[in-house]
Every structure is written in structure tokens, then in C-alpha cells.
Length: 80
Image (tube, rainbow, N blue to C red; front, side, top):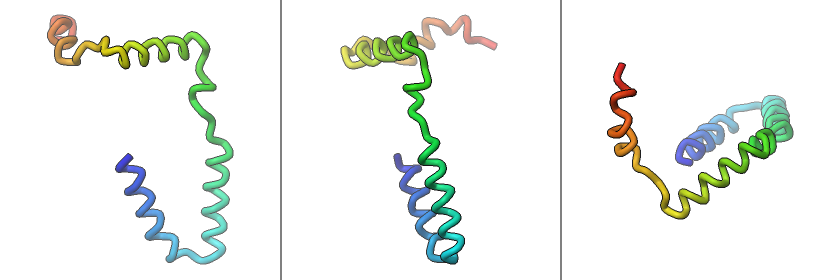
């Protein structure tokens, strides 16, 4: 989220330097991006959605394994 704020501030710093015509062009690009933006959730299949929902439910229930425990258990397969 911090990255988005930095980008917002940087964009705001450049806007006063642009002419009205340039601002119109930028606005057109931004509107185009916003209109074409699709939610990735709608792009994945029902099976994938169900798997994600199941994982989120397990996470909320505290059924997690810390990364260091997983790495320790599977260390022999991780060697290069």
C-alpha cells in the first residue's frame, strides 16, 4: 500500500508541469486503463475460486504451517 501512495504523490508532482492538452491525454490513458481493468477473480475458474476460498478459511481458522517449519521439513529437496 505504501508503494501506491508514493506513486500517487509522484504523479501529483508532475501534473502541474503539464499543459492542458497533455493533461487531457493523461486523463484519456487513465480512463482507458480503468475501463479495461477486470477483476482477476472473474477470470479464474470455479475450481480455482473454491481452492482459494478453502485456503482462506483454513488461514482464518489458524491452520497454518510457518514457512521455516516447511523449509526444515523439505530441506533435502531444496538443496541445489
